Length: 417
Image 1 (cartoon, rainbow, N blue to C red):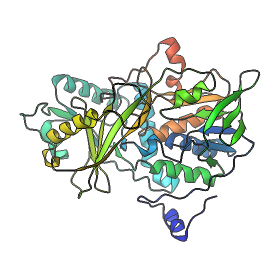
Image 2 (cartoon, rainbow, N blue to C red; image 1 turned 120 degrees about the vertical axis):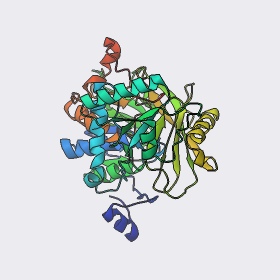
Image 3 (cartoon, rainbow, N blue to C red; image 1 turned 90 degrees about the vertical axis):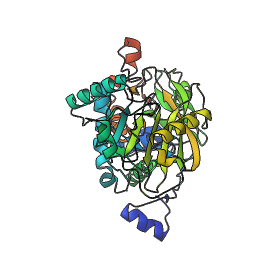
Image 4 (cartoon, rainbow, N blue to C red; image 1 turned 90 degrees about the horizontal axis):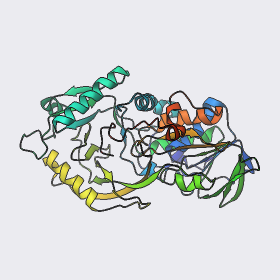
């Protein structure tokens, strides 16, 4: 149960919010649960929600070292899309987009999903060839995508500079109209409220310090800052720190963690209608409902758990934004930040059982984590509940690194990372 003021209860009833967030009462953990989720971000809370709603598992705890939604869920750039090249990725991300489209109604909580379109700019002949290949592959998989000329791209996004004198002139663009944005942390709060209503315990400020295994090697629970908590199923969804948590069970994963940077401008009136991404100059931008420009930069070249990263990354990104959108040159930046993303060698996620009985892992999303939140949570819940993968996440198991059947979206995701 939560403690709400009368005003908060009214806001809760209508599912609306701006910067408002409910104040959760963290329950004392039980001695044991049927399942434990490590990580109270969007993926972890969503997994608990679907375990309870679709699989009837109500005796669940979500354990979080910090506060609900305080990790990468609160540090993303809000973009939603499914225009990935390979069949496996397109199926996973489009499953997620379909869930995004009705998620506010599903959760009775406004996640502020906006299908404003995601447009990816082509600056070279190679870009044109690659994006047209994406368009054809997406259409073959039933995923919407279309090719625009430079003039059509400017008509769709009037602030775009298509002058031929640019360092990297715009030669065309690929557009997914179903793509768009959602409120960055609202998905976590919506899933948290839904899971809590079904009896899930959300335990904040409770760091996991160990994963215990019995004599047969199977999971028997976790050691935490609040003591040992028993469970025969443990799902680890701790973005950026998955390797650290899994090492507690004696598992080494093929992951590296990098700072991923972004920044936001001062708020202005609505002038930017869509999301624009550019691989060649590496920058992407959209405008939030509060009027801020949300600008995504790249990953640092070095591994780190820093949530700041190198200053040259946002500087280069702003150079690109100012060239593509000259009208923004007088804008002031309010703040910049970094998330910590864990990434696999093939830049595709792991949603899988592990060799440790009762231990499951959802990780390695790189920059794809936010857009995949509902779909990832949905199929991970299926995997945990049934001890077998959902058909959508079956290609994303750990075994692919043993067998060499890689889903190499490193260059196919239409962004540089």
